[in-house]
Length: 89
View 1: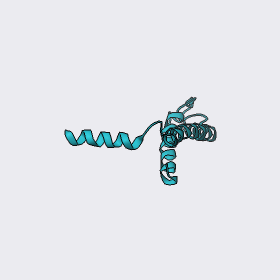
View 2: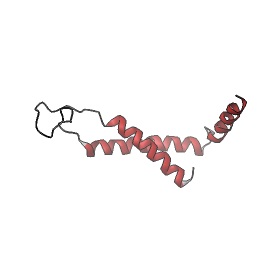
View 3: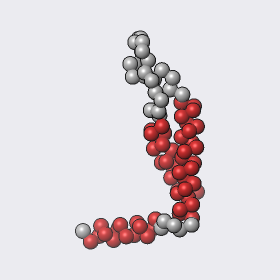
View 4: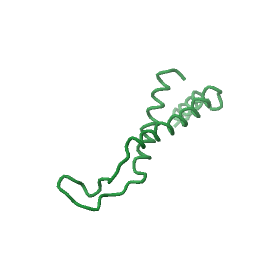
């Protein structure tokens, strides 16, 4: 995996994980006020969630990197097989 593809894969993992982690532990405000949405979280803890997302993304990226570098999963062969199957349809 080259540096550019490694960064792209990490960013894809990061954003997917972020949207999965953002709702964790959110509790809505009980009071209503002007300019305050009823669904807005009371304490969003964004720094903590970004840190958790960064760690989870790094772990997942490392697993994918090892799978590719040790050739446990051959993505190019899988892509060729998928392209060959589509050509027959």
